[in-house]
Image (tube, rainbow, N blue to C red):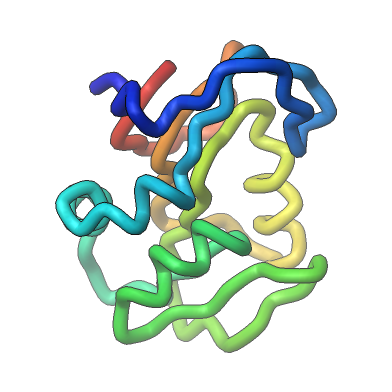
Length: 131
């Protein structure tokens, strides 16, 4: 599925990955739209997991679930009880996901991102949107 055009900004943007892009996919703004927020929540695998969100947008999404934690400031905030589902907003290089897994200390049962922008795909993940 393609990311909604009205949440894409055009220009020159520095990315967290260190790269430059002519597009900024504004996931934070997308999360304020109830229809898209519900679509995101309904796309995440359900189970007996702790939902772990990578700050900021991933943490907002994970906070919707009863049992959640977050990765912020390079540490785990909260506790993981058993298996977990890792959530992030956008994946370009997989670095933030790999850093989160390293902080947690073991592999997630599922990885979900709102938007997958990867050129090289090493981690198995699910996404709602792809570039």
